[in-house]
Image 1: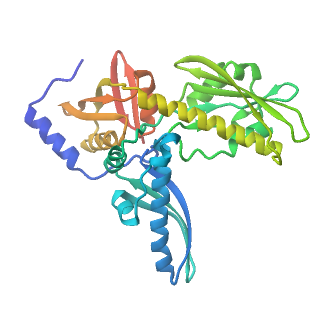
Image 2 (image 1 turned 90 degrees about the vertical axis):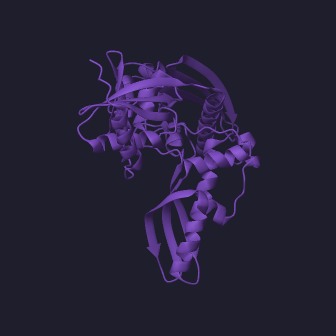
Image 3 (image 1 turned 45 degrees about the vertical axis):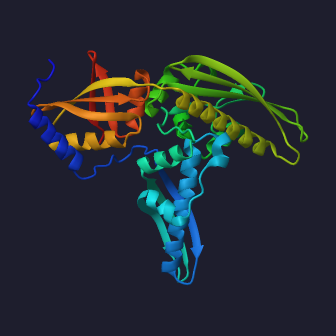
Length: 360
């Protein structure tokens, strides 16, 4: 049974409470306008002076990382260069994750969140296209073929992926923890991107998108060549392509593998960002929220406002134990459930209706 509409005055009153309520932040969602744990190490005349300088450096570094995360590499040369005061005006909040002092030195890690509107306006003024909505997580299962394909956390190809830092990525490339391999899944299952183990792992990480880079190393003596068959499985079906990477003079085999993993990750992210910028996806949603308290509605409204893939969230009907909201999503329906988890919201379809609730 669909909820009955209430008086417009009641709805508007509720909406004013929601908009005016205090900030309620999800504990574990990904904010695409936040750069986490920027390291700083500054020496100055006093510890207080060093801390002030470090804050400025952290903000500037974070802005650079954020703009690189959102834009394409061919536009990096056009990115605006701002002075410290201009950067500070874009900052929404600071969080000090680690701090150590001496009489003249400050060492720490700072998380910087920027104003979404300010960043959009900055890039818009410079006519730089950008992507802001994070993609669904993508599970990476590296397979190393050296006399036979194998998947193991102890091989060099797996280690090359484990050493990557995807800080700049809106495309979340997720490597399973070593302990999740258990006794070792069948390599055939992994290379097909399906099967009980792969599907269970996908459920654990909230994704049906799987990438299997199958690497084969040939040659030695500084002339090794790495061939990688990159297999992608997901809502778009199965895709596959090959790349070949040659060892550079003076480069170790381990360094070759690390470089190849980084280049593959960068290429996947680049392709995803281009597609995101080219696409004009608009998915209208009518969602039901079963209420236990007004605070729950405030929480959901605030998280939806922070979700860059959601536009114009609006309460259109309100009853004592249920609310109905309309909104537009910038991703297709099949990606909604996984995407919203990153913003602290569970969104699911039941009997043809969308239902949403805040994650704990």
